[in-house]
Image (spheres, rainbow, N blue to C red):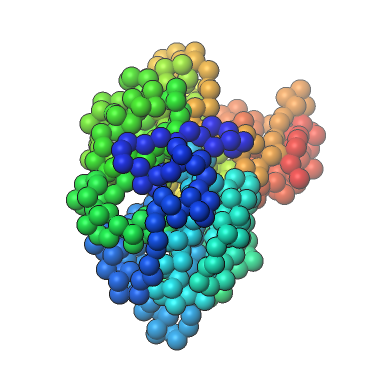
Length: 488
């Protein structure tokens, strides 16, 4: 799906977050009030009790209980005698996810209702909505703010549309005017977030659910879905789907029904949870139900509600390699597991695509970065690659025996063109290269020497944080064989 237009939106009855879409398209303030009705304020105790009773959790990927976040912010603000800040994370920097863009573009008042409820309840001094600079939904959100009165000053902050920009710490840093990358040391926003104040940071869809629950009450909200995870979920279904869409469905809905609705080919492997998610087989997809527990029961992950299928007309290993190389390039480059480990992981996946690597090499590379990063990015990339080994084992065997499968790579996983901000590419004039190996010493994170002593590197853009050293390697090449094209 292209960022030029929003995907289709559909639902299993009854629609909640997407209510009114069929009739109004985008809900302005008048349509929003007509569809959803009035909203009453809640004090802190009522807000926490509501969140706990409906088991509201973050919909950005981690699934952290919202009520616990609110309590942590209240305790921090009281202990330090400081006002709080509410942050709506609507960056949706996951390339395969569209649900937050849909809400921003078509139901912005629902997000703002939830943020306003939270701000009044915890006594926040301001609300900040974080968006990426792709322009999708920003105009709709600005128009919604102009149509209503918020309880506290509310602003929009845009950050670069990069994968790591959506990480909570990276967003807080961006709002504070710092580099839009995760902090090197993990900190809790509830202790020190925007301007070092206690900050309630949660996903756009989470705030929209809060606004619905405040209107429906605990019993009304929980009458749909499963008892442990009541309500509905927004799924972005794409890949080999003939009818890709954002689908709203009650928790407990069989995943197979969702895949059939979007016309996903039978027998397709499925990536669940997005680029930091896990793969499941078609057989597992037939048994899965839509919820965190339902996906986990078959080895999947709900994450940010991403469901991407791989059809029979593309090379699954080539698709995987594109994503892993993208994740390596999108790294902030702040810690060893990202700078070195993800490049190694990408190389091992490239090797199994070429038929010269093995699953053991991929597992070793994934294990080398797991649990060691300054943020969750290395863990997510390792999880994606490692989970593919069992699901795509037949493809790995085919590539090993035939040095490929003969199918093209159609980018069904939706890797963005240009891989974010990384544009420059290294090339070698092989008529000049004498195998001095100096380039591998200057840029070891990207260039390695093959068994014959010649440079080898992935056919992907050089990560933006390595461009300076890549240029240095070009200048230092004794044979003038190395080239760097594109870039800043």
